[in-house]
Image (cartoon, rainbow, N blue to C red; front, side, top):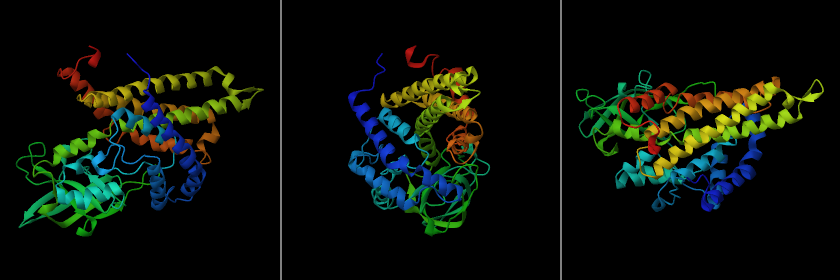
Length: 390
């Protein structure tokens, strides 16, 4: 077994770290100031400028195929880069990406939706979650009724990331109630905002917020069907599954940065004539955080490695998502405790992380859903205890 990074992996990771450190982290204090004034930490134009600057370093389209100008990186490398992105609380991500299911588009759709999204000229969002269909995605109700060569969409989607900014949505709708959602009764549509759907901002405890999307007799031409009729739920599951090892990868970066702040503070903050790092209570919080962080790292890299081997990654990704999301919540909570009252203020990013990371235990599959997947795989014999080491 070799736990060392290759020279290429180390070089790519270090270059990404340098970019985040030199170009993004200097914006943190201004981002905090804006957020305290209830403004976006980073304007879209500023994000675009950073992404184009990163493109000069070669970071463009981490998962995008080379034929579309991307890097098409292995999953392990993508995981390492997302960890570096997590080190800063500025809401930055590298550009040149598009929803993975957009590659199921036909040539005309790729020219109209996929390529402009990769180039940053269009913004997409994906919509499957509804007020009554969260973890139970098979319970969606938004309907699409055929009318001549068009489809008429009615219903609502909720908690849609990018829904407030997107100019088009990939929406999964029920097209055949008799077949049911899992039996081929749903279809994915590419729906431009100008076709009539509207978005409503949802306030959350974190910065920014998702959207509710409302479809009221929105007419969509048949040429805007993504994939095939009846393939909607299948595409939706492909979209949801893709990010399960990337979310905890990002959590690693957050936890590493936050724990580093705690160590520095414990070595400098003095009470009763000594630094607080000499107190066993503080030492144990730091030790527990390091152990959990390191355990999460290898679960996450194992999940990414499983993807690169071409094996079914669902079991490994669910374990990485479950443990990684729990880990970062534990670490940030301890880091706030170590900082005391200062950690609770908005002068430091700790309270911001505290609100941000709580979402990681909910979106892209709740903790409970990950436990269901993991236990079901074992109970039904889909995988063995010990996985690929058995």
